Image 1: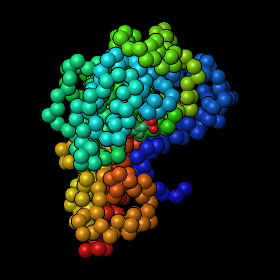
Image 2 (image 1 turned 120 degrees about the vertical axis):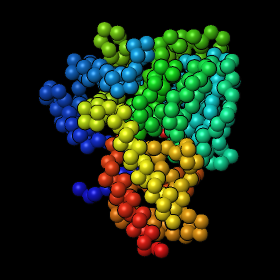
Image 3 (image 1 turned 90 degrees about the vertical axis):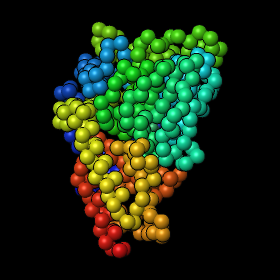
Image 4 (image 1 turned 135 degrees about the horizontal axis):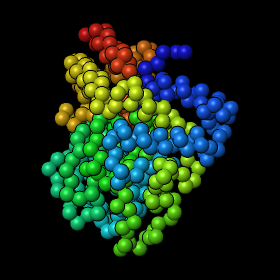
Length: 367
Ligand SMILES: *Cc1c(COP(=O)(O)O)cnc(C)c1O
């Protein structure tokens, strides 16, 4: 197979072990003689896989018993309105740190008043706004912890005077998280925890079923109400309807890798920081390149940079140079331009070393 260093922003690189065991399960799931995509989701082996996947989430993030862990369809984008449908009674507050955050706020407006407490749109979302005030009369405060397109990240669990809700699509499982600081955490799986097709929701049970004043979508459609998907306590599984079996299986294998091979999210974070520093050090050192995100807000997942002033003409040449050396997915989002390398959990350090070497060789060729 061709050597490719995968820096795609999502879907993206998965642990090799997870891919291999999924290939085997597609042929024969759990020694049933039937493939993963052909089993009934009520098969005991599948019920066990669901329960184990949920338990892996609980173990890895220390999720307390008063929280539910749900696996849904529709991607993070479906959660933009589902979150508001379940939690927005009158008013919600949003921090606008990128287009995903903006889209989340737009959907919430269908359900009530939305206050944008701060935005970094003025500088192409290259920083995380600070010094804003969270309105205490809002039902919740929504943040996007990692801004995939711009490479900025809120790398800590903030203290919030009202319920905190976070889109963690692109940094979940990259560091330990104090789940108790949040009412709800959600995200698409396709960055750090699996392939596209499954969405995770971690929700504190007591915040649900509290919509009293709202006219619109009240009561909630069955599939939109998180309580529909809450686990049957005895079995530790939730399957109101057919779950996305294949992506959940890959997620199960990915989390097993994270727990058993890596040793958990704290270990993962050390590795992520090391990989991230390696690349940022090169971006800062290399005379041909310059980073785009504010240094104090730099993401450890997505790294964005452009050609240095006066060297813009070399952009296409570097892209071709990198492609020639097996670098895949380093084109920056069109709104930022330049380059972006996503170093998610499963991205090996060798890939980062290869990219850094490539940047150094390109500099030598153009000194
Ligand atoms: C990728 C991404 C999304 C969109 O996820 P989908 O599953 O494609 O809907 C939302 N928020 C963030 C932060 C993302 O990185």
